[in-house]
Image 1 (cartoon, rainbow, N blue to C red):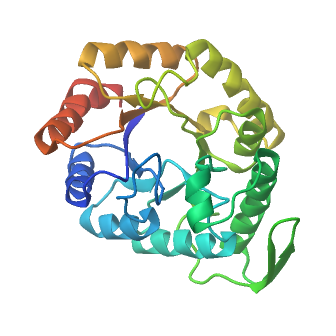
Image 2 (image 1 turned 120 degrees about the horizontal axis):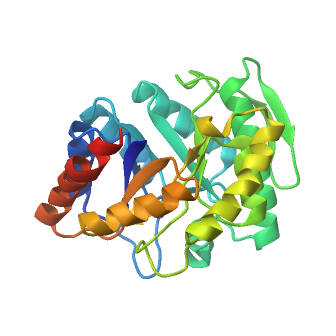
Length: 283
């Protein structure tokens, strides 16, 4: 079982850099950051897709991505170019975390807010356009209900083929079906990340089946799919119990969550402890 690290983009940039470098050195498979411009009283976050190429230059092996990018927030063709560029600069280490968006004030300030069903449909169209732009060698035209693009072409293409993996963060049935149709991973929030609103192991197992049903239609073995959940940092014994519970429910990839970080020495110590006492024993 691989192990990764997810943290908030509102963390101090210098600490984020140190966390990513240490995670790389300690054998973490991925380093993920939240992708928000503002949220619940917080505005001090970097743009994730500007930050990740910078971190790529500071690290060697660790994969880099978001948890998650709301696909309804940016123009999809521009996002496709940003992700492709990041993948080229990182030499093929980028993961696109995908969601439909949830924080209305952020959209009203920087983008356009849509109702839930519209956001899901926009996300589906976005996924179709992203994957076509990453793989097509000729200019493409796309006309959907929300997205229109004429003559778009992206070069250079992403290093990863056919394109960077897409990991979904939602728990709604419609988004889970999109995860099974377009994605290679599922990374919902879990214990202690924000509050008690997350799938327990039993619910996790049920939601997982929705994705598996779609994977079967694509003839993709579920073993090739990342089933994870962001388990926020705690003492070693608590983390082990959480991992065991979710592993029994079908989790195959442990992501250590570090939702709110302000103490540098404590944050770095937790990354090192989790790797040595848990992560390196899972691999």
